[in-house]
Length: 171
Picture 1 (cartoon, one colour):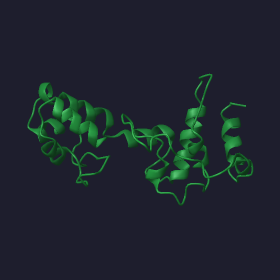
Picture 2: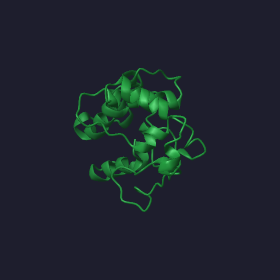
Picture 3: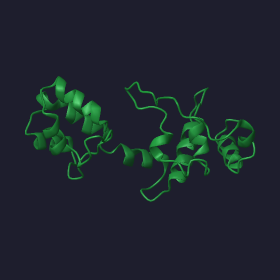
Picture 4: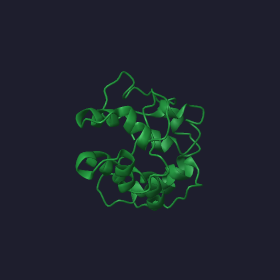
């Protein structure tokens, strides 16, 4: 969950941000941009109980939990992966799902395709983020590819990319 969004919702709805974060989210540093719901919260009603509030007053946190609490689990299931799949297996599964759509255009980021290989293995995962949703910052959209187009033509992953594109009927 985006920590700034939680702060914003608290301010707009007369909740104390520190109290909400303590009640609903796992401990994180004050500068953490992403925070996770506590594992013991299993239902949106648990959120209301943790806040000692009603759905009328705390609807935003009720809805936030309902929509986002298990999104990773839902996505893994949708992609055909389990909790133990590797990052590269998940990237491949996500690219396959995206390319299986019947939409005329199926456009994925070059970063996603390159993640099938070892291009970003030495990068800090936070440095591969293109932008932070809902924000304007110097780092947004500033990533530079670590490879030239000529180098990309000879990557070991090109066969896997072609396999995905071919098996999903894109070529």
